[in-house]
Image (cartoon, rainbow, N blue to C red; front, side):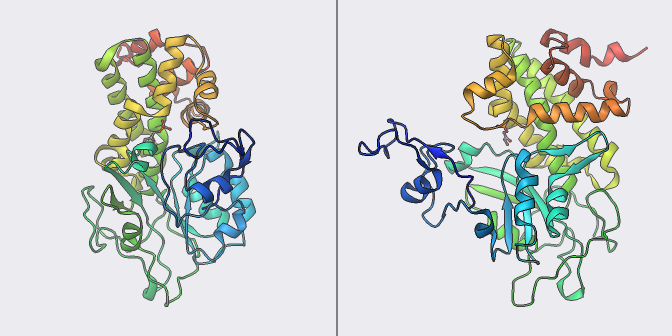
Length: 379
Ligand code: 13P
């Protein structure tokens, strides 16, 4: 596991606090490898002893056939720049990053971005997965979307909906001989085939790799839907935090979740077309379930709620409370808004627009009911 190296002092309250060392900063990788605990970002959770924290990115990825990307999206470009050309050419990746890369020109998925940057195929994992609960091995579900283009007949991926041992509850499209990428374009990517001596890197392989008694995996092919679910729900979670912080209760929170889910589906359908499946948003862990958990106890929700209660900005709460972790919702809200504005579509996504306006101080939480009202918009 690559770990961004930091100097960290072990707090006095930690069982690993050593009087002889005191508050003297130590390398985070050294702390993790000595005590099998990430005292800064995941305190109190024992890590398996076969996880080795490695401060060298190039060393950590060397010889790995499967690369799992789990880092704030702000750092992807730099990480890809460092490992390009230094990885196994037939490696495959899974992006666990909840966000999308939105610019005024368009929306791209982090899985695509990493895949294009490294010339490998990258799928996406997302779900109702509050990190601390998974770390404590409390039961949850997740969704992995993986749909690489076929390489040749001997190494074609398992057709959609036909992976062995995989229970699909999301209705998948029929097996389609013409492979399309996450945007519905006919695949052009030239993938390096996995050598015959390796097991196929397919749905079965990824399910086996991730599935645990406390972490149930659902495999699907809708990479765009899974990625958009994980990104857009962060905007909705901010809205839920705003109304909860105002003390408006569960009905108001349910209202923003309903409207938010509709905007998420609309966004997926409008900008990713035929490959995005409504069911990914309404049936999978990466859709509605992640929306619910994020609006109940996620960091975006908690920070937005506290910001309203204390009368300060969400950015200020992030700095005070998150110990260096980064919220994804604030940047996603801003980027999505800029993208919609460039197309004159802000009013078609009233909740997304309202959240951005509130973050920028151009609207208040009290405006939300009017801003999102269906009846007001009708002539
Ligand atoms: P945040 O804690 O970043 O809001 O996200 C929670 C989450 O993604 C739960 O699945």
